[in-house]
Amino acid sequence: MEEAIKKEILYDLGQAITILQQRENKDVEELRALSDHGIEDVAVHKNLDLISVTVLIYSLYKIITSIPEKDYQSIIKELQNAKNSLEKKQLGRYNSSIKNLFQLVRKCNAKVKVHLQDVMEAAKIKKSAALFEKGLSIGQAAGLMGLSNWDLQAYAGKTTSMDLHEEKVSAQKRVSTALKIFGVS
Image: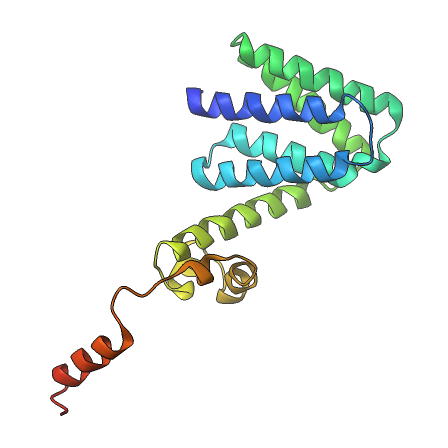
């Protein structure tokens, strides 16, 4: 496993453990924010281990309020086991802990496959938005990521990237150049 990926996974697991240590109402929002952070990482790295942890955190965010106390404590314990195993480079134990975590989540709510699709779709949209911010048209950015223009427009409309854009060449100069090209005086 690449060191950068390992670092991101350890961060995500550590944050999840910290959030879940004490059961509070704000846990849902904190897990949502952590999930969003993970989705951005997935958009950048496209690593299967990172995708798994992001889907796990997103799944926890979706079901956290309905998890029975016994399962809640088991989830915290498995998160700690996964983090400790990864820190010690015991990848077999790490993978086993992640598998156990998914089984616990599935036991509480069977929508893990839907959550995977949600995470992957969100990662595509964020990546497309980054391409759009770099200067590609909405159509080009959406097409490169296999999305429709509508998917990206809904997201881009909520960002400030459109407001931050500044034209480098004035409108008057562009019109003048266009008129010269077409021989219009």
